[in-house]
Length: 379
Length: 79
Ligand SMILES: Cc1cc2nc3c(=O)[nH]c(=O)nc-3n(C[C@H](O)[C@H](O)[C@H](O)COP(=O)(O)OP(=O)(O)OC[C@H]3O[C@@H](n4cnc5c(N)ncnc54)[C@H](O)[C@@H]3O)c2cc1C
Image 1 (cartoon, rainbow over the protein chains, first blue to last red):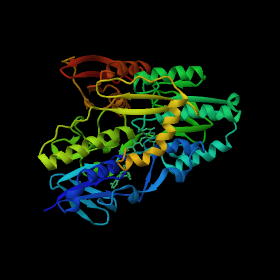
Image 2 (spheres, rainbow over the protein chains, first blue to last red):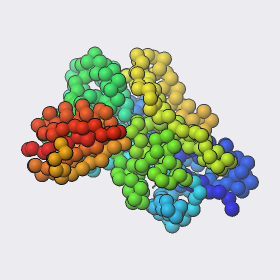
Image 3 (tube, chains in turn green, red):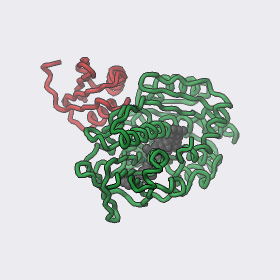
Image 4 (cartoon, rainbow over the protein chains, first blue to last red):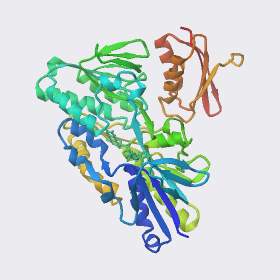
């Protein structure tokens, strides 16, 4: 009987794992010894870091969206369907349209999603830019904005920990270029006692904030938003009024993770080096949905995908694998429209942001195009 | 701290910074005055972040102890 690999979720992590496995196992798949199925709920694939550029009209929506099937190796079967249940004890997946899949190896790659409902008034009162529709709405509001107080308020947990900072710096350059900086106040809030979860990044960002006269408040946990009065209230009993509110709502993992009893709030308990789920050695977890205490970023998903593809390939051929994940994450951080910083870190090395430069900004723009090759497993 | 009776325990070990603090914030919000809450955290940052947050919101830190691979932080909701 053919060995079956099932991948749930076709975002960054799921797509890279699928393509790398197809490359590693090409002859066995062609010979009918291995079957790879990907089940994902959307027929399209969004390059999410591009949303930031859509907001400022520096990329068009069509630049950041591709057909999902076109990104996946033809040796992988792609089913567009939503997974409703993952039964790890019986190694069985059930989908919304009633399909059942059995597996020898499972890869959970269901990502994370914003949950604005957790904060009353947030959905009505705030803009966000974490989905394509919301990014377009924010772009349209910015086009009409002629000055006032812009508040960027961050909830946790959230993916791409640097995106709120990038948004803040890009807003600054946008208002400067539009000539309304003198009529605009930028105000940033963060839930803990610094402006970013990673201390070195926070220290760097504070210097940038001070240089640009961007005000900030820490220990600000959004509790509710009053869209009529245009005020955000914090759990710490402070309040901030706004003309334009850009919020990063708290995130959860996919509903199916909770429904299947795998993990609270959709986060899958994951071994931080072997990348498997709890006691299940044949269930791997990649990307945002892990509960590993590192950044929920595309680069994390990418590096984890390489490790998972190697582990599954070796386990099929030799029965064991030596590969482990060392916590590597790499991020470019836009510090405006024409300069970017860069960090990398792993479980043993803390991040150290480099001085922003034009060169790093160009590298980020280049990556925006290279992403499509990365996700195909060619880079 | 051994004698303090705990009303609610939050096991935030393995949760990413600022996860343990966030879990605590949620628990403090939803509990009654007088509740004693313990947070278990494997994040070193929590031993600074949690006391500073309590300071800001005027809640009480009963104590912090280091237990093999994590910290136990005990807090009382006083208002
Ligand atoms: C504005 C913004 C900027 C960002 N910038 C950066 C950056 O500069 N650098 C960086 O590294 N990262 C960045 N990221 C983060 C990055 O996009 C994510 O961390 C990455 O996409 C995570 O990959 P993933 O595979 O875990 O999840 P996703 O790519 O989100 O994929 C999950 C997939 O699973 C599907 N799915 C979920 N539930 C089910 C189900 N029940 N059944 C079937 N399918 C399901 C979803 O529809 C989705 O297609 C940014 C994100 C945003 C929003």
